[in-house]
Length: 368
Image (tube, rainbow, N blue to C red):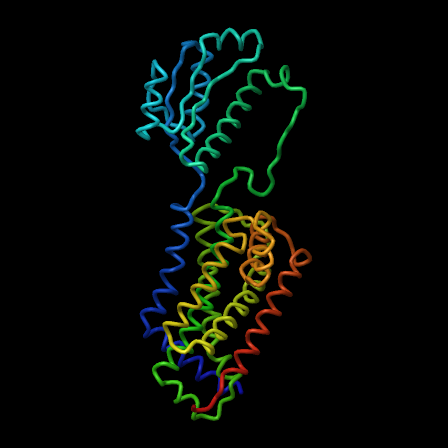
């Protein structure tokens, strides 16, 4: 059996090398995805354009402004004298927020009285406005602590500790998700192309006339893509850790082992589609629709599953990326072990086995 599988594996590698579409997916898709989600698709706001009306003109007000500009999030565009000027600048999108300091600001701080500072935020982009509001809250609480102001005015001393991602960097959240996305896209898509292309071009007949079982053909087709998907996963981890500074707190060996399980489930799904689809285009379309969209929208990659309607939450149970997201984020960010992840591994093994069994049964090693 082993001797019959090796020629199929060798033949598949030759097809991959000679196929520009497969090479593009293998080599450039991981790079494209990591750059898009690492830079363009980033919820961390920088260089927020800020305007200031400083009626106080005091050392305390300058200290407040410096606190904003030195945070790394805000850039002071200019000082203004009237509220109408601020309104005009926000309408023209020259400002994203404005800080208005009252005349009695310094006196109120000196006497430890409550001081109201007006902040105007452009809410046309609700997500950006929420992030700006959170930044402002952090800065004002930090400044209040320095001035020993919080202890006098707040009855509760609330101290928040954020574990695993204390700086709330978006890239820490996305890199494990990108791994799940890339692995299922490459594994399912390339495996699907491999079978469907040979069926469409008629080259599958060369294999079918030989005394090879369906299981052997399936295994021979799957093995090269397991290796290629595995190498892409390693590449994404290295870029995330070395380039973007994502901390890796868990076991590399454990992540590799569980990634193979996930690749196994993804490849099995790609094989299943290739046995159902009548042509290469249909196979590619089905794979993209049933892997990319669910993996991005229904796996917890971008939107939390807990906030979805019950119907969509039920659908997420058949999305393989959901389980590997829990695995990758748990190992990379939290450093947890297999004792916390065995349920996800079991689901992936069951799904992969079911897909592979159906694929082998539907794949008829005979000429129609």
